[in-house]
Amino acid sequence: MRIYDNTFLQAISCPLKVYHLASEQQEKNKKKVSYRHRNKLRLRDVISLQYENQKFTSDSIRSAEEETESWLKEESVAICGAVLRSGNLVTRIPILVKNRDHFTLIQVHGKLRKRVQGDEIQWPVQSRSTASYLLKAAYRSFVLLQSREISSLNVTLYFPNRAYRSTEENLLHTLSGIREAQGNPDSSVKADDLFAAVDATDAARKCMENIPESVSHPIFVGKSVEEACRFIEEKPLENGNILDISIHKECKYCEFRRETTGAYTGCWNQFFPDKNVELPDLHVYELIGHGNDEESEKGYHYQEQVPTTEPYSSFENIQQSGGK
Image (cartoon, rainbow, N blue to C red):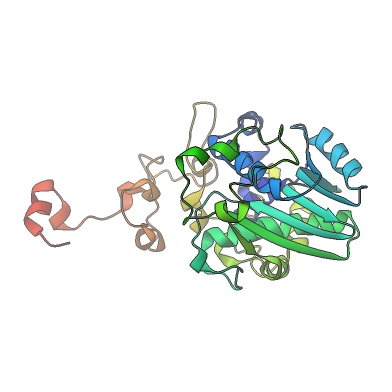
């Protein structure tokens, strides 16, 4: 089974996700391109304007891999959508810049970033989302280092600049005709104005050596990216719950937790059936509230198991209780 960027991230958060990703139904759904993904492609195209000799790979993974291999023979190039492979490990990098034997791996993220947040990612990271960005960069860096001999590698994360304000005449101007205007970018709006560039070279290297606990299943805590890749390759994770995994904190964020269509059985119904639960599709993570961590820590994973105190047994009692 090929291990792509998303496959690796999903497997690190919970090995059970590999089982669901390997199913035919999920393979069909993966072909859909989300609005968020299309938006990131447009942001990527704008960022690429600052580099010379821009190249855009095909949508097909196989074609993009061949194009990447061919273009990397040039002395200086910026490849958008570069595809690299090392055995079963495959990665697609938003922008890969080569200058002789020096490489820069660039990731594009849609989350706004303030300039005051700094120009470098500090390790260890506190934010779960930032840890996820770094883990993806660490995996991509590992595949790159495995597939090619390079002297140095930098990692840069680009975020839309929260402080940027566009004039009416420049609104969306740089988001149109990017590929047709390669090499002739409009100088009225610069990438430095639109985006905040953050150096993640050191943090990505440390993440490659030690996977962050905030985005990892306990099985992978303390492992390197290389060790995790070998674990995923060697274990037949697509065969089901062979590791006897129980409900854990990642279930809170998991898209496979519950049944989404009639043709797809939710993970909990399949691997964690509870005959005492009448409504097994009503999980505490769907409750409106602030996290529901307290309930899950006590073993309350289903809504019908959560005890309610007297003041909240009716809407009238809630109104009378006042305060918080």
